[in-house]
Length: 348
Ligand SMILES: Cc1ncc(COP(=O)(O)O)c(C=O)c1O
Image (cartoon, rainbow, N blue to C red):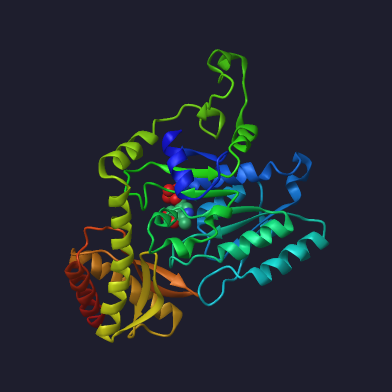
């Protein structure tokens, strides 16, 4: 409870909020969306609609499927040029769905997309949700932790308006797997969504005012996930986490400078929250040829055995992606890795 409460306060959720440690972001998204669904009477669940962007993590699709929110009722909207969810088409989609008798349930915003680190306009989306009476969920599995850094906090403004949010300590709080965390604005909603007390558990029922975390989510038997996070906050102190996150943000910016200086790279999304994407100028324009070029390049990177870069796609075209969250990476490591990458690209 103490560790959850630290995270609640760091994210700016009010007293009365609460949360749960789970295995990771996937379970956290599923759990929070199950809580959101409780806003509707069970008979209305087949008409519930979820809204998110085309950059939303696949765990949210999976959560929606698991909850039976499928087909046209899981709406992925096309993002703007900065890979952010645009509130205008979202408002239109909500109105159109209401007009045909569907029941808009929740907006899922990104606080740091996996692909590019883009943050959806959280304040505008929170305002829209308040106006339209929708649940406001924020998936910030990797980047929400950056709220503790003064460098990133302004970018994440509006996080404190979330009805629920996801933050994975096993991502940017440097914890060993598995520890994901979900937070909700109103802790009582967890228990009302999940508590079931069969006769064989009555002996261990929570006393009045006590939290029994097995009543707050999907897992009955649970491991003591809070311990490692509690211990590392105690041992290293919050200042060490702040410095490590700031370093990750700076590293992505430094990568941007190195890529620009080299002249052979096109930056496809700028450094944001420790993620930058780019492609080599020699990448073929034809999509299939570009895929092949990238596959060969990524294979060459692995064979080179020095550093790793991952691949993804933006607007249907492959890009390279650096996620610089390791604070031990030096500027020299970064320069050497990008120099090698450029040389490998030129051999293809
Ligand atoms: C934004 C986002 N949401 C959810 C997840 C899923 O988290 P996990 O792998 O811990 O289940 C990820 C994982 O990369 C993520 O980046």
